[in-house]
View 1 (cartoon, rainbow, N blue to C red):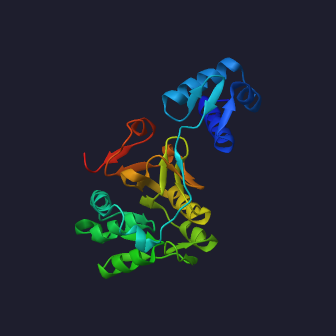
View 2: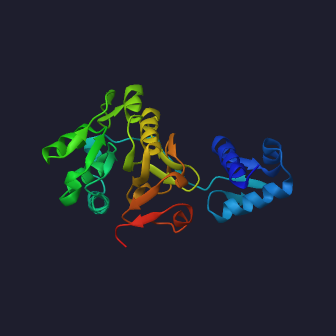
View 3: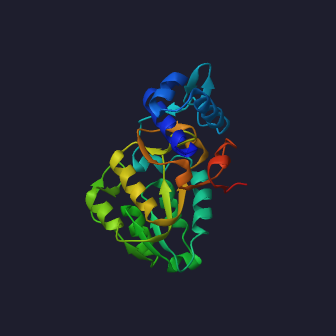
Length: 251
């Protein structure tokens, strides 16, 4: 078994139990104690676990399940979101085929689209995003599916089936939480599934998140840290740079 495969299994077990002994991990992975100890040392170095005497725990992160309405989200971290949005919009070229996720930070991206980015083609599951882009004269595709009132996002099997028909040059996704061990997370499993589907269809994946999102874990996993790059106003922990590409708009 390769090291990364063992790391994934160790993290999955810790996600379930929050803590595990070396012996429990040896039995679960069917490997030697020395192998587990080496793996825990490496995961601890990466900041993905806390190595303790006789085992390991997940790092102390904030577990959350709250979800403000879209209207409420638009009043939070406004300056940070606008900074991120301008940096994201600057990445879009005229020949791009872009997926723009629902959410307040990505809505700020739609507002920031200008210049060459106006000639790009867009797919979005955000109703407000589609309307704003269309008003700017952009070519916009909207998947079918169920409209979730809390976030004004189109979700469900029909939306996911529609996304399977596309190949995106860039995907800009939102996440409620970003954590070294848990990755990119969000409150709702159906929204997480749509985000993950879009990420799999994209050549470049950018998660847009302000600095308050780091260290938070929500119930539904979108992707691991290695599955996407982070575009933020400021990264509060240098260890994230060791796990994936992090672009800081305020740097």
